[in-house]
Length: 365
Image 1 (cartoon, one colour):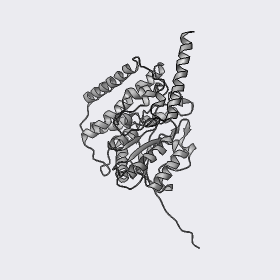
Image 2 (cartoon, rainbow, N blue to C red; image 1 turned 30 degrees about the vertical axis):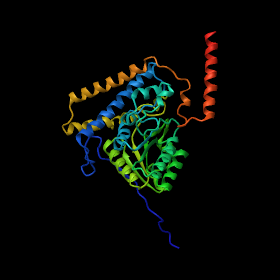
Image 3 (cartoon, rainbow, N blue to C red; image 1 turned 90 degrees about the vertical axis):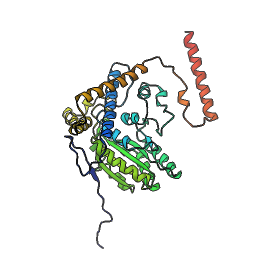
Image 4 (cartoon, rainbow, N blue to C red; image 1 turned 180 degrees about the vertical axis):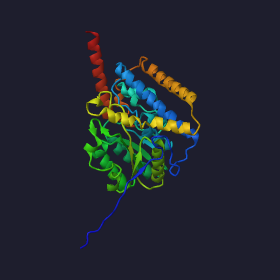
């Protein structure tokens, strides 16, 4: 009996904008100049906020948080391809996309400063809150996507996770259900090469993460995650396919975590500094800025104005953050269910009674 191939597969890699800011004209998504500037503004604001929060944390004015510096293209390029009716299901390192989706920077800062209220979302917008449990949000995204399909809505769902999460059971189960149900969901794996201190090659033998989609029966593509045009192009195609009933897609965005995993981490203990220096040469902001300059739509004056505007926006949020803020001790009970249950309200009452009792004891010494 002959041995023959049962099936053959391939994974494509997409790059449109290279490290020198040159565009592959055949692959260019042809975004208008105004859209390119909007993307650059969003990425710049995300970088400014990230770096300002790091300084605040080092000064003891901000809690532990995960940095997103270096991943702005992978994050913002995806959000730019989304429509208002699409659902956004984040992980915890998507600051730029969250701001683009209308999440206030002040709320983001409050969340990472320990306020439960910081994860309260604006009433308008199809956005889910930050998910700090690794990979858990992928299941939520598939559930939302399945509901969207049942309701016959012309919408899709986007969820993010990291390369480490791609080995988590939650993510693999989510992708399996998405494939079986043909759920309109786009999985975006931000492969930043490090799952905290574990390098990419030590946590999976798979040659690419994109190929994991093949096992679940849907399309996977690898993109240069520091190339915002490639990220946008791949996401836009995946979203259009999902909205048209074509099922899910996995996008592996190859990027790099230029800073620490969180502010509680010291990457110098496990990551060579020359590797980091090489990755800074692929900085997504510098790449897009070079493109804008090549097209004659950017100059030093515009750059100075943008940086000043971003600093003002961040400083306004910092000032508001450090204003006295009333703490609502039972905030954690507010958004568990759309309609509170009797059991939940009983737990709230018991909790508040304990808080008041403890406060009374403290006031009487």
